[in-house]
Length: 261
Image (cartoon, rainbow, N blue to C red; front, side, top):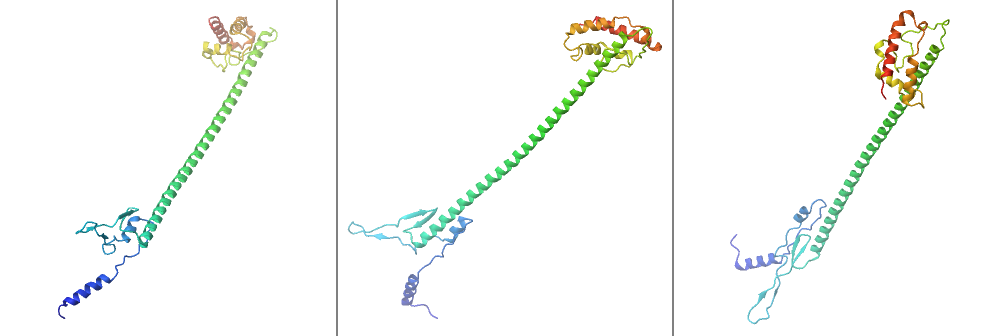
């Protein structure tokens, strides 16, 4: 085939110009606006040609450019046609969908924080409840121990008074033998040897609130010294315990005599 003639070239150009140029319809994507913009190719000069208006001055003409419009970050040249308006509506739906996703994410985050806070509060409440239970149990145990100790001390003082009543009422014809370990010593703990009778233990016994309640410390000390300076009949002791009891009795008198209040 030969080269096209001049008339054929003119007809081909006219046919190409008469063929309408179409743009693919934009399909909105809910996940990314960038993909949406890629689906909408930029407008070409073939779609919108600048409008020209005759100049009012004589002998010359000036070119008037079409107005430039922006919508949702997209530039549109010239007036908006129905396709452009549809494209803008799709962008608005995408932006609304993004706003809804952001609001949903924030609401979900708030709910998760609230649930975590609720779990933390429940754990704290359980911990406080457990701590309160332990504290209450400790207080109850302390109260029980104090009650048992009070009962023990009350028994110690009662036994002490009972044994001294036996010693003071002892007649020569009616012997009542005491061993060293069961003699009524003025101490709160059991006595096994002479070294167990110390000034600290005697003071603890004589000045105890449960011993002779209602009496002052001075009165308690005076009555105790009067009791321990009495002559105790030797018939009250076991023969092999006599020396140890008499020596320990002298120790008690010495402690009471030098005790200061």
